[in-house]
Image 1 (spheres, rainbow, N blue to C red):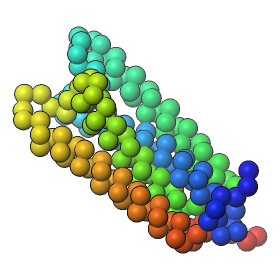
Image 2 (image 1 turned 120 degrees about the vertical axis):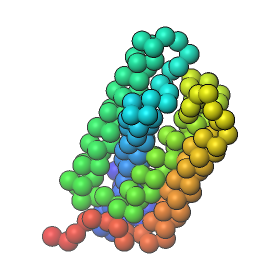
Image 3 (image 1 turned 90 degrees about the vertical axis):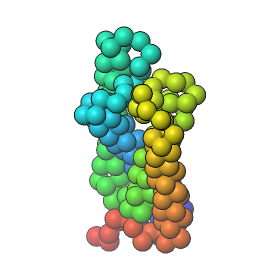
Image 4 (image 1 turned 60 degrees about the vertical axis):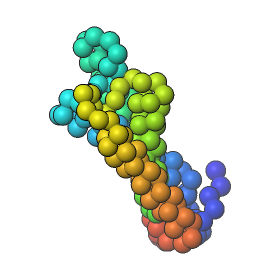
Length: 163
């Protein structure tokens, strides 16, 4: 595959670095949600519209999915590092975009459209929804800004070094 735009001639792959880190970001935010909100705070489960056993099963499936995303993302990331083709700025941008994408998808699709679960139960949801989705939008804006910044300084974050 030809080097992506903005590799500065050092072999850094902008798009692959962005994608690998985005997969890590998705898995990382799923892990934060699962560990903090599902297990530690016990505010909700991934699927709350059935029995506690089904809720626990759904959390286990989410946990398995997040681990697959983390392993796949780190595998792609390690491959880029091994090839000395990692574009660091693109990777940071991808991480932020992945974090924000998972958070916004969960807040809009899982919470509101599919109604699989809510952030909390028995409270006024508006402040929780605003915080949940607002955090997602902030992460996405930061990721978009980091992407713009990475494209403006092509190759500046590449790990490729002359031998």
